[in-house]
Image (cartoon, rainbow, N blue to C red):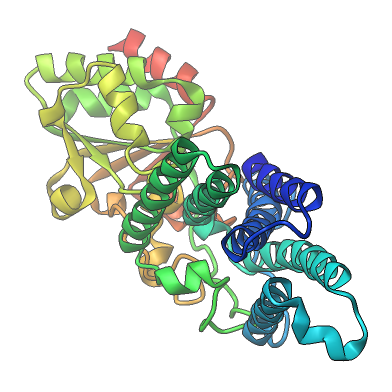
Length: 377
């Protein structure tokens, strides 16, 4: 986030332009802006790299990870004490201005390293949560910047961003079955040992077609549509909305099942469906719909992977094990729209449901597949 970099630059400029004439409150705001800004800036770079596939989604597992983080935070805290009260280092023969500048510089470097290590130590499946944490941090950096500049509006906006990001983080951690403390503290309390081998895939992937899907839909009474981030990327919501309306006009029971963290942010898929004028009474959250899959004739999965992965319940060695998911594989027939067989979600692992006997994979761009399905219906 460039907000973090801007906070660091603004704080450094405030200090260098008014060195020796700043009160304790302003000095504290400067140091905190540099500290939070450093974590936010480098942490955002790592999160972006993992989400874009530029880095491995696997967590960095250095020995003594938690101790390293604690040591860096403790050192930064000592640096803040020296920055606020440079007389502490008089015995070392260092003049106050030099001590303060050295403390601030060291804080900028160490907090940047801390941000890098904290985010790198968290696996790809939890990156959406990390994004909301960093968003919250950027808000608090703005608050510090607002105090520095004497700008109450900037501080108020920063507080709004900080609190909303924190609330969103809590919501996402609850939805994913994750510890908010572990996510914020870079995986603190979790094992740094290498995970065991993932369960081997059994069976073969059945490649389906739009024609097969149409025939199955026409024979079905109960239909579930489960969208994911792939639908958002393909901008296929309008085609999907028309498909749902056509099926409903045929007298079929059509519903949408939405995972709490489907997409990049909670509510993203709800907004997209609302944009396409999907009636609210057709859209259900995971907790409302999960027990109904066994009685569903056909489930269509469009662009979702981790949020519908059976490995979350069946494979203890899986990185998303324990995360609540939509149990789409319990439907009588499942059609999964995917660009390629090897494509994965945040977890970086293939979805085991693709190998189940009742699942067919329709390959191709989600937008093209949905348009073909709409035309066929």
